[in-house]
Length: 194
Image 1 (spheres, helix red, strand yellow):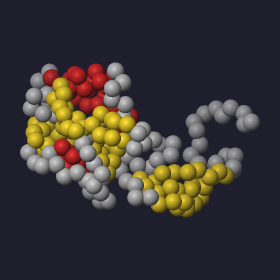
Image 2 (cartoon, rainbow, N blue to C red):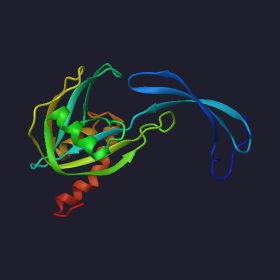
Image 3 (cartoon, rainbow, N blue to C red):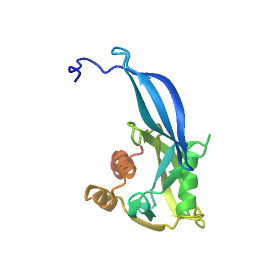
């Protein structure tokens, strides 16, 4: 066993990368790294995925647009924000507006980024962008992907945040989005703009 390391962690050096598997959703990479001090080499598995977007669509009544859908990873239903995969070269805000319209039929104004997160930096190399759309109203027909079936609802922001804190919303990226949005919502409630 190695002795404890003191000081900042070292940046490992990438020596090479090979594709181990390609799926419709992501690639599995095997990447070889070398530690700069110990000179040890190790292989790590990385999921190479497109960036994603989650959309906080705020209605004129102060509700958030929610989607409920069956998720194969958990073999069950998940209450979430609208969102999806960002197409190659697509602007994250444009992608958010598109995903919102396709999944829910809602559109709004003042669409903007409020940040991004790494979904799981231990094994994934992508980002999930967080987009806020204000004054969202249903204005179009939904355009689901082949296997999508989505129940759309709206709920007051306070109820959505309570559902997140109470364990009813369990999707980690949706929780990230909601808690990044919470101070923005507090500013909007105080008559400000953020």
